[in-house]
Image (cartoon, rainbow, N blue to C red; front, top):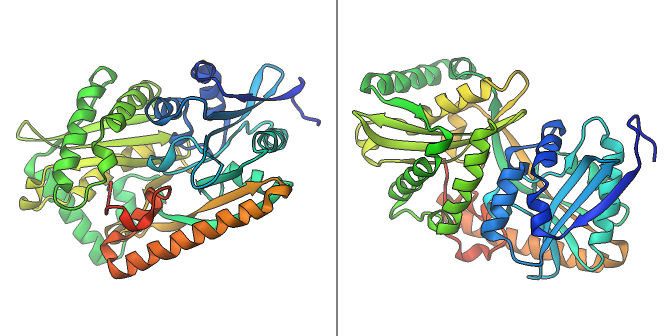
Length: 389
């Protein structure tokens, strides 16, 4: 292989948890150089997720280096059900998956990762969920030499990374007037917003989760959001990401009382509100919580610079459409060695059956919307209705 960069190209497989932990510095550097990276590919997010959800002996991280420089990475883990699969670290609680590729050495990095993944998947199918249309993983799919299949995954809604005033100007006149009125109502009530510093992240996340549970009580809260392992993951990951400028935890106060909180994650090209919680009492005061939160996350997104995206993340709920977003459909990429094509086709059929079952449930119970995609590794028919926004 040739490259504008010097140095020998090597590909290795990391299976050791300690080695993965030690990659933080060079991983973060690669994350910044990857043009399509999202917050869910940061080392802070992935390593914290592994500590909460990983299983000993299952780690499979393919690394490509040009000399000593890390130019590519694919963070996966091995699972055995419903068949042997390599699946992304981050699991169902992460909205996007991508490989990391150095933008200055992208062609060779993708080729090296293809070779490394081919070696890592001797007996397994690679099942990559929630891949954005412009992700570097799409380039991996294009050069894959074995069997492959592309399927639709979750729908996401996206806005330009602009301040709330600019976003309102994109809306039809009557809708824009209503949006401005909602924001004036929030200001008239005197709701204040403050950002939690790194040393207060644990307390702020605790408040967020408590308000999230209160908000969804009796309405089918995602049980995972209430489990200690999820909170532990958020605290670990967010503390590092706040320090590195990749996350913000905001608290909203009314008369000195905490009434809402949200967690927004950001990368150079994408910002999104990941989780929020709000006191149900705000509804009695006719506070439009989504508008309140969107104003702050839009400000954060605009600060990342021109050309970025404000993502409303997975789900095409009706209230998101009020802001005239653009729907973007994630994709599911199945890859396998040529000899394993029958196994890949079996996996494809399993996914199709599950998706048809989920669509049937959604048709019968419209409020379910996109919940099945968020927890796609579990049987669709038994999942609760969830929501983060």
